[in-house]
Length: 165
Length: 443
Image (tube, rainbow over all chains, first blue to last red; front, side, top):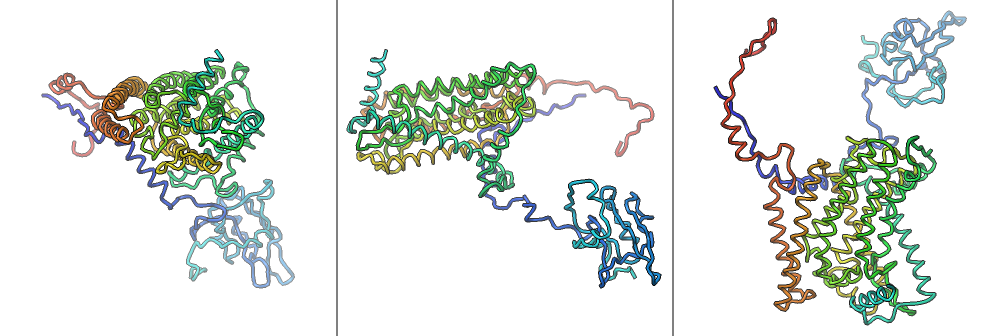
């Protein structure tokens, strides 16, 4: 029994170097003149972030400017990377509030569990990614810094029904 | 010796068709003008090199649908200045085993030939000033063309010395490749210009330019098209640009001959590459595209050689140069690199025979046409040469380019081998799968 050996007889168009060169140069010229560029000019233009983007944290506040946090302790409990430090306090009316609330953004893995578990809609992960600091310590965000952030927050669920009811 | 040179100079001035001009300027004015010309050409050339680097980066970005450097200055024009400042500030590193004198000399050696070629190029119409005629070339040598060939062959030294003195095997390989490549292509480059010399009847560059002057019909690209094609390919090889950038072939040789160079010394090689590109473009415009001649008008070659004419022709010369620089960049970002055997086969088996045969063709055609009473300066001559060239180009590209110009990777089979292969009978080997291995699917 025999097997056939296939020898490719290539068409002239494939073995002609000059033709291939001219074709390639026409293609590059077309791209050269094409005004449609793929570059996003970063500091001026930004790629739109997904509404579910999980970035730098933000603490929401009430109308009178206090943190919504009631220091229940759920977020440090659920946090898988153990980056939230919470020391609860209590005022004269018996309302709990955080004495210390710090998030180490270096340790954080941005899983968003803290936002998911928070009963008061206080701590959120934000739609934000431009973090830079001159020192490692700068990445430990305290309560004041978390409250002063203004970027939009992650929409992990339908904003029309925030409590999921 | 000196009298012979002077005689040659006189012959070339009387032959270049500018006898009606007043005598050349002499004394202090000549000296002043020479200094001014040197300053102007050097400045324009160096700034031009910077702009060409910027243009290359922008054009390659556009070809790849990017934007390229657009932050430093308007449209990124000052990018090269910023890079230059950065490279001067950087630390120079010297490999411990390098041979330092040559290691330091090599960047200079690769940069200088490109620069001093400009000394003999006529870049504008002569200026007929009150104090005498100023020839618009820094040194209007009567043997300008031979000077260019001599200088062009110096270019390989910088690269070979860089490769050798670095004491790095990749750099050495790059240097070796470059010496083989540049020497091979220099021959076809020199041969491709001989038809031009046949038509001009002289090796003086100003004579070559004035022979092409006119409506643009006598440009050598029409008279010697095939020579131009050979020359442009050889020029690509001489400047070590893609598709002939084997000396630096980064996928095989890291960075080739300049692998060990850092900071401003590396930058010198970079500048030298673009300086070579500009010089090659200038040579192409001088030898084949009429030099400073403005096409479709006789006005620029006519008698009153005013300063305006000089400046306009100078501008037009630069338009031609920039066009060829664009072609260099365009080709670089289109073509892949040659394989080494393809490079050698193209140089020795294709380009050199074509260039040699073309010398015969042009010489025979010139002789025949002159026998019929058609002088090289007449329009009939240009038309006749154009017809001959079109036929030859059709033959070259239509017949030769059938997988023969460049041997492809699979290479053509000999007919006998093909027949042998087709008639081969192969016994099927009995195949027993190993125990435990099961075939999936249709098996």
